[in-house]
Image (cartoon, rainbow, N blue to C red; front, side):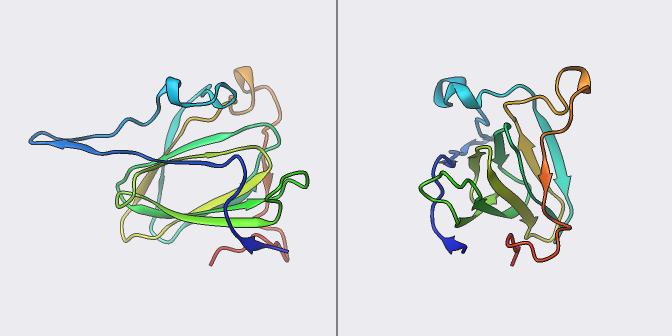
Length: 157
């Protein structure tokens, strides 16, 4: 059974926007503010078109360190699929991006997805703690995809 509520080990941190006459600056990541188990091993940026959903999927070992600062906004969905978690079965949804700059760290075993809820392409930065497909891209990808699974409990509304 899925219920609304916070998820153990998910980190959501507001990212202050520092603005002056030149524009603005947001720190995406600071090593002194992240638990060492979530230290990034790589980084990428992706663009998602309006209305498009990425996910839901989860990782066995990887933690994602998403940074949502704009342009655009996303509705970010998370489901605690870890059977040994005190918040197993919880679903947490946040709006993140230009209107609400956030860093969101999603630990292994937490299913996640996001939808661009704006009217223009939007960006997401990710600094995961594992290399995609391992060193030299020689390993199996650490991803369990749920988006094409019939009767998936991980529903995007």
